[in-house]
Length: 387
Ligand SMILES: [Zn+2]
Image 1 (cartoon, helix red, strand yellow):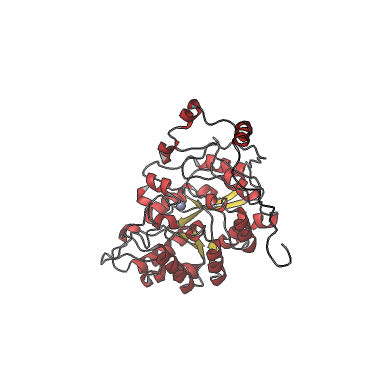
Image 2 (cartoon, helix red, strand yellow; image 1 turned 60 degrees about the vertical axis):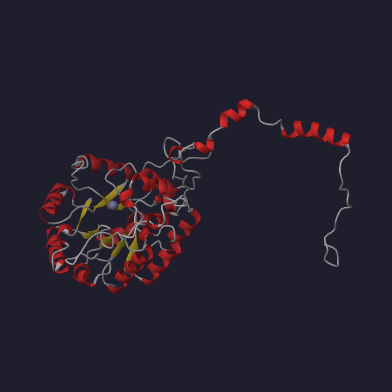
């Protein structure tokens, strides 16, 4: 800049080139930038914009340091597993095999959320009775009786019985606010006062409630080309809640917080990072406002690994509150979770190296040992009274 603030300009040499100058520049340019695409080149990439989005599966060519983790650095308590009897697949493997797998991965204990109630709970408790310190079973409501009067009262009594029988907590699937209906056919919302006896009883018994409210925000957004989870929703349309049969996402989030605040003496495990893994500042606020709430990370490692710096700061700040979880019944997911949490690896890809439509590479958070120890196991051990 000159003193009077105007930009220094080179002398103006602009103007049309002469014939000869133009011809020479063209010859130079062809070599400098290469000739125009040949017919063969054009043909090779033709149709890229006709490719179906669902078929696009790039395979990144990066070669970056990779530090796969086959065993967690510190003992793990996985607070979100499904190890009950499923009508589709029966029991998930032999108990002895599960124990062996857990030992190999350094998983001290898992919370089995599939205890349900009554005879089903009895069966689950019996199945894992030989390893009661490794498999902590959470009971759940008799969902099919939701439309009967006094559902909340009866569930509170059932919870007392379940805990007496050996249940270590209570699990709420996302039915509240999405499809569980009362005797009048209206949806039960997560903060429905008729369910208060359940939360109060859990608080009195000192057992945690793992609650899953709503689902990721994208499941409630228009299912158009801007939807971040469209490929997944296309495969599982029953997970799409953007139709007018369902409440708005924000309404469910607010009711989730209202529930936490109304029952400060009840410990809540917030499933799937409260279903706001894409807004960790919001989750942090809830954690600060509600000392009884512990977000768990099951099935959201992909969201956390897309924002490694933001996620690391979140784990650091709330290291006494975040719990480890994975979801599902098998133990194959754990190495990816361990790698994202422990390493600083860039571009963590699925094993086969391809990224199917709608998936993204993950980036390691590189959590410090002190944070890892707490998140992996110490926080959950304290809350679940595991030795
Ligand atoms: Zn689950």
